[in-house]
Length: 288
Image (tube, one colour):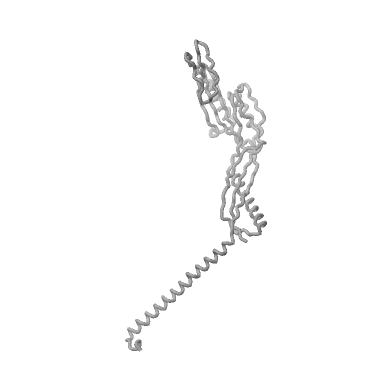
């Protein structure tokens, strides 16, 4: 009755208001239903995931590779009562060693001076005669020279050490022995090494890591089969720390002290193989 008494303009306003209210009401009902549907889905997923658990599996891999780089430390030691003479002799021999090595195709970037020392050789004298210091029973408190003794420098030792990287030892048989023998003949009287390395180690490390990951996958599948579960996805990873070291088959000349410079021959160097290995840990999600 009241609606019929309204004017045409008023009726339009009321009609539009009712339409808007209906739309908002429908939106509210839809939003309410969507909200509670999302809650229900979340609870269902929580129940579904409650049936999952994690499996931690390790994978290992190793490869033996013939090294192609040899690292030598060649040292020239000279000693003389005159420092200038000791240094001059050392410079002459050290330069001769470096020149010989370069003549065999070793590049400048593979040569590095790793130690240079001038060490005074001292004695204690008493009443003009050399006084022999007694041996100490403690390394922390060495014995002091007694009163009346004098310290005197009798000679100087000059030490020059050169690190050399000899490459392509796997394909150039005899080159390492030639360099070693020739360096000794040129004046090196102390040799340390060689230590064998693999030049392209990063590439091989990545390959071995991939092998370790594959081993972890195989171990995970085997474990899942024993447990009667199935693997769904990977949820964690750690490791990949590839490393390498020389195995027992790799033998080398080491610590050749006080060699006679007239000796220029060298023993046969057995390169052997280096072991490169990797261990990884992979965490899988499994389900009943």
